[in-house]
Image 1 (tube, rainbow, N blue to C red):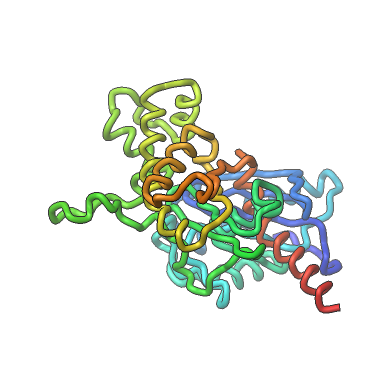
Image 2 (image 1 turned 60 degrees about the horizontal axis):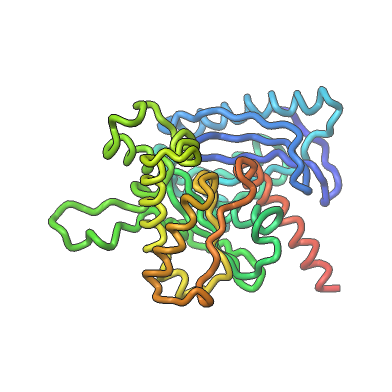
Length: 329
């Protein structure tokens, strides 16, 4: 593994990792969110944590060698967005529905050992909220909710201008909520929001309810692209997913009264096709008037969001450390 020299505490260059079952994304960027190089690979979700670390070492070496060939400096900190139940106090990944074989893994200490650098880690929704606060739709917002819409839905929120990173590692996993309407029907468990609104869940719904219309290898991105090209089957899928999500946001809206709810990747790529049914269902279920409702905003960062999620934990920590130090003077 390449070793970087120790440089000043306010370094510009970051190695970012976004770890989920959809993709493992590695980026080389700076504190301004400018990404110079990236690579990615599709993980085997049943692989061991140690096997995964070996792949991270291999792919990060490749990325950093490309950066060094361009006479770019080595990164001085590592930033990680992780899909799973991560304990920020202990640095341990308790578990991950994306990677079922990972149990009580010392994520932070293992990455520090691998890179010999300071490591900043947040759960995916928290990292998404940080990315939006730093570079996206939440730059001028103090109270907002962010929802990560990959395989396993998760939520984070900002109150009074500060994004919360709860001490309980299981907090924010809203994808495990089961559909309200079906709770009293028979003995079979109703579907979860992951199964109805997550990226893999929407694909599964397409293959179950519209099997003759889709290729068996269809992806969420193909469904979103089809909807943007006025495919009625794709529009129906995304409208239903948005409606299910919106219905279940009502308690959070009443509790937090956010200025906005920001929809993350990949659902945000569908724009109003997805966000409008989310808003309508949320309003119907809250009983609130238009003037009381939060805006529902698809992330404007688009395909850049997963990359910026990778960088956000380190950038957010650095910026707020600077602000906290300034306030004490």
